[in-house]
Structure formats: C-alpha cells, structure tokens
Image (cartoon, rainbow over all chains, first blue to last red; front, side, top):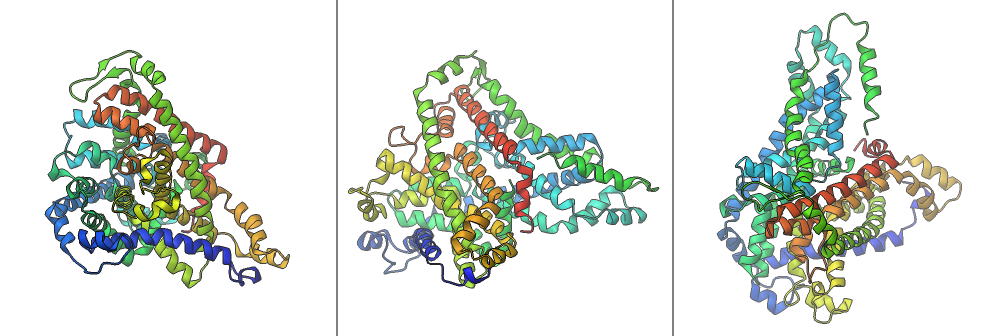
Length: 276
Length: 312
C-alpha cells in the first residue's frame, strides 16, 4: 500500500471517513452524555449538549431495577455457552481431522450443511422441543439451542487450525505410548490455543448479546438476561431517557473493557465469523 | 465447501502407509456428543418445522393435525406478501448502502498509518453493543419529543420530528440502524482482505503510471472479489432473518409497513399463539434462507472464500 500514488493526501477518503466518524461517534457520545445527566438537564439543554451537571443518579436507578440480577444471568449463560461449545467441539474437530472413519467425515458434512440453517427461522420447533423437555423459563433453555447453532462454525474453524498440526508430532507421541485422549489433551489443546481463544470470544459475544432465544424462553423477572432487561427498562423508565441510556451503556461496559485490554483477541474473534 | 475433504483424507492415508506402529486415532465417541447435540437441537427442528406447519398448536398441550389449512391461509394472507416485499426492499437497501461503505472504509482502514489505526478502533465500537442495545438506543434518539429526531427530523423533511411515524422514515431508520450496527463488521472483513493484497501489485501499477483511482478499480476491487461475495452473502441472508431491530425500533409499524417475515412469524406464534401458522411462515423462511445460501455457495465457490481471511 505504498508508492507514489499513495503519497498524495487522499481527500475523498478523508471526507468519507470524517463523515463516518460523525455517524459512529455522535450516537455513542450522546449515549454517554445522556446517561450522565438528569432528565431535567436533558430537557433543558437539548440532546446534543454535554451534561452541565454530571450525576450518577441513573447509575443507581439502573441497579434499583434489578440490573445486577440480569447481569448475573447473562454471565452464567455466556460462561455455560462457551464451556459447553468447547467441550463438544474440540473433540469433534479432533475426530474430524484425525479419524479415518467415514462416519466422522459424514458428520462433518452435516455440520457444514448446518451453516446454512438460519437459527431465527426454527425458533418455533425449538420452542416445542424445549417446552416438552420442561425447560421453559430456565437458563438452560437459552444455552442448549445457542450451543447447537454454534457448533457448525466452531467445528469448522477449529478443524481448520487442527489441520496445521504436523503428523510427525502425533508420530512422536505414539512412540511415547500416548493414546488418542492424551494426544488431544497434551498436543491438540496447547497447539490450538489461539483458535480456541478466538472461537471463545466469538461464541461468548454471541451469547452475551443474544436476544431471540431469551425472548421466547425467559419469562420470570429473576430469569431475565441483560438484553431482555433492557427491553423491560424501556417500559419502566418511560420517558426517563437518561436512565434508559445508562442501562444500554452498562450492558456493554464489560465488552468495552475487554476491547480496551484485549482488542486483538476481540477483533480476531469477531472476524472469525467472517469465515462463515 | 466439502470439496477439500477427499484430498485431506487422501493425504492422511498416504502419510500413514508403510508405517509399522499404528498411530492411535480418535474413535467416534469424540464426535458423537457434538453430532447428537446438533442433530437434536438444530436438525430435528428443521424437520419439525415442516411437520408443525400441518398442525395447529396453541403452545400448550400437543399439536393437532390440521391438514393444509395453514398453507392455504399463507397463500391467501396479504400480510405475508407485504412482509415479503418489505423484506426484499430492506435487503436491497441494506446491501446497496452497506457494501460500498464497508468496502471503502475497509480498504482505507487497511493502510498502516497511525491515524487510520486510531480511527478504526473507534469505527469498530458499534460491534461491542448488542442488537437490542443498539435498537433501544436509537429508539430513544428517534423519540420525536425528546430525542435527536426533534432536531434532525426537520433537516430530512420531517418537520414534527416523527421520523418513524411514516413508512418511508421507518424503513430508512431501520436501514440506517442496521447499517450502523453491521458496517463495522463488514469493514473488518474488507480490512483483513485488503491487507492481504500483495503490495507488489500496487508497485507494478505505479510503475505503469496508474493513479490511485485506477489502482482501486483494477487491483483492489478484482482482488477483493471473493470478499465481496462473502460479505454480500452475510448481508443478504442476514436481512432475511433480522428481526430484533424491527421489534424494538418500530415494532412493525406504522401499521404493517415494517412487518418482515420473521416478525410475522414471531407475532403469529408468541403473541397470537398460532404456532402452526407461525411454523408455516418459518418453513417459508427456512426454504428461502437455505436455498439462498446454498445457491450462493454453489455459484461462487464458498470454500475458496475462506482463504481471504487466512493469516488474520
């Protein structure tokens, strides 16, 4: 991307990115500014004015409405989705790459077909299955289908990285008398740490932000996750716009922190979806 | 997509021949749990959705057979056709706005300059928010009394600031919000792909006297061909199924003007408790979504596309 053609300032690109910067930054700045002022301040000074009197009353209001409980449920769902997805997909990817069985490669083909199934389109039968299992209104109802729809992409990404492990390493372990379980634990796991982190981030973000499965399965207030909590904040806060914005801001705060300290992993995890 | 399997298998076989000690291989128990899980929660629903479309079910008790009643109703339902048209319109608008924007910003962000890195870090911020958070945030901004819409509405010809109160305004708002959310993601894909274009191509073009615009049209765009297909597939299949933004931003209104198929399905099932009819709409969605992605895969060689992201 160097050379003479690139040395002149690119005015068109400059203008476009400046415009896009406004589009991206104004809503985010307004969200932060609203959440730090009182409703009265917002009404008096208009939506784009910075807060004249910084207040944390919205922070307290959000917690009064059960924010901590929603956050706890989201954390549990996210952790369970990551752990269960990895527990199922790492051995599966290992078998896809190393097994010579026709059934293993047939399963892989079925997984690949699964990439084309839109999860939103099958919520009705998933609802039937979960209801018949008696899991309606439990966090497990959100976790199980989310994990299932993660598997195709995650197995695809993991098996891609597992293919890079040289056969000689397996040979060496055979000489040492290792079985296939030990190979998975002490060869495959350490060597695919990078892609395991990437898929964990991707899967975790998806679970953190998921809306449709919680929407149809979680009804009791003490079962709700953050995204649903935000939806009920809208009714509870009514025209209290700053309170609502504080809720939106706080729901993304842990991800913002992750972005600050582990941007490389987060971006890699997000781009992992691009392979889909 | 599956075409890369046989050569890999062949390689493995070759590698193994002539070796005395048998290398332990994972047995089927390693893939079985994942396969069963996926089969039960993802493949079974695919079969069930079709079966349910021939039943009536209120969500309680068991589904009752209903023959083809749901299907007859579907083909007679004006709302379904209106929703289909709206879905198509939103897909076209999303693609035509998101693709050029993401492509240009992505190529720009691929440059290694310091200011570009800093700005890209800001550009990716919307990726950190959930669809629900983004939709609710913009719902508040679009509030005609208190939000930004009161100030911005008149600029775009909405004197009362009630942008989402009209069909055109509501559709534009959805396209904008969805673009705000997803352009950063597609930018990320294009950025990664543009960084993989060999610099030597640009050097050669410069020697031949090509300017920046020519280099973009003759090198960047052709080199990004696969990425454009990947990104477009995600936009198109995504538009077919997105629904959170609409539920939370416009709730399908005004009237039925922003009803899309997933929204109709959700309403039929979880608000009107007509799960049989909802499953009929869902079947339509599954068929459309799966056909669309398989068609794109078939005609564009999806397997090759993954390589554009290698090395990221």
